[in-house]
Image (tube, rainbow, N blue to C red):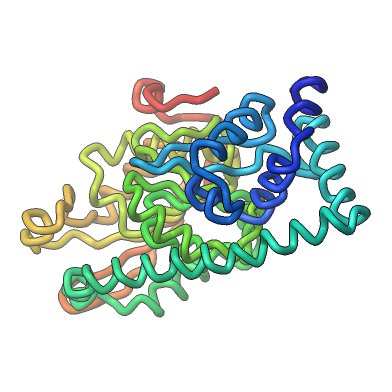
Length: 331
């Protein structure tokens, strides 16, 4: 960051309001326009200036563009941290600015309500399909409780939820994490997750569209990586786990929740499962090949499918094959 573009970007009342809104939650450009009462093209111009100055970040999800703050009081770079402190102090010391910011944040309630209504409609459309799959395996409650136990009782640190879907697992684990990233390839699923997780602090949540075989994160970014009912979609699970290893810090943890091997072919033909579960032998070999020291798995029998929880610790020396992870390397 440079001081002159930073000060020029902040020298506008609308852009000051945008930065305070983004400190509260990630927002689409259209949602910002709704809160600010301005046209979307005009808001887009303000957003471009903020992004060019390094104060905000934009991310495209399908036809939507989402914005988040790129600065925080406890984040690098130092100039961005100073700008974040200045904005907070401005709201504390400038009564007129504080009143405008408070009014803007009140409008966020309508944004949250619209997201929740959209999520409810999506669930209603797909309820029968999900209920069909749920009827084949253990109830969600015992599986979630077992996952919490398998991850131990300490802090999860920086958490990556791969294939976050509706955001339920991220929501479950967030109280034990210092920061939460949720990755999914589906923009619609990310909108569901955003509706579920919008109560989390904006600077602790990062929802990203991307491919689990080419993770858009730097090496050693996370302390805990979780795959909940997602690895069976992988054509090459060894590449997916190599990418998980790449972004996991030495000594970090992985948890894979998935089906034990089964013969329900309809899950492949009707629900796009690439793998009909995994045997312990397969999963332990996959984890070892990626550089994780596996721990004894847990089994939660269902009728007819058994859910397994495999966990492991990342070794401090990388052992994953370089060619498997190279396509997603972000150093």
